[in-house]
Amino acid sequence: KNQVEQSPQSLIILEGKNCTLQCNYTVSPFSNLRWYKQDTGRGPVSLTIMTFSENTKSNGRYTATLDADTKQSSLHITASQLSDSASYICVVRNSGGSNYKLTFGKGTLLTVNP
Amino acid sequence: ETGVTQSPTHLIKTRGQQVTLRCSSQSGHNTVSWYQQALGQGPQFIFQYYREEENGRGNFPPRFSGLQFPNYSSELNVNALELDDSALYLCASSLGPGEETQYFGPGTRLLVL
Image (tube, rainbow over all chains, first blue to last red; front, side, top):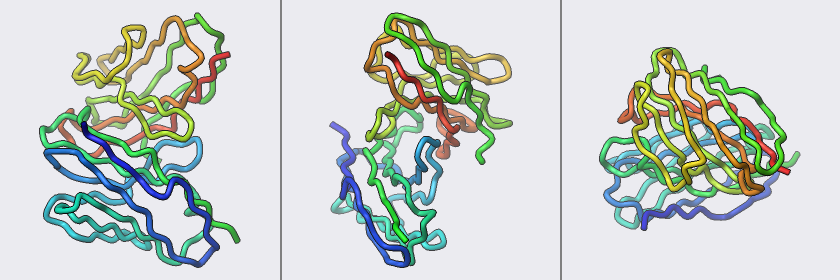
């Protein structure tokens, strides 16, 4: 069964600190992995997308890594800001081309305190 | 902002009632996918519409139905509402059914009492 597990479930950090969120998946065959940021009560917004051949990708203060062998990904946030408070969702896509082959994680709820 | 809009933003219904949620896709997008997101959970795929036809369905009962119009906007209809239908309903549009990137709307928060 295709699954995406995220950890921790929730995280509280102080403004300015760094943090790392984890995503483990069992989706096969793998096509790509995407991290979304979802503000409370809003739709998810894509941060990064990684394919099988990519090990790391950055988007500003967000850096995602992918280890396709161990089927693990991480999202590292540097110098956190209050606006980073949100849920971060890992989504893995099967190869095959149809949108309905996406598997969503439950997300990590990040709270950044002043 | 993604250009995907949803209405209404919030809705309160009672058990057994019917509800219709609406989504306008981003300009140029012909594919709309609907998701249900319960509190503290990730989105669950309901179904996808491509050029006015259903193009895939998740594990949801038939009382969840949809429609896509010639302008590619879409509706999600839920009949015989149950308490567990309370959730954030998201729609996402894309350039095509195989297109990598989906753009999500802000969602409709449905509360069933």
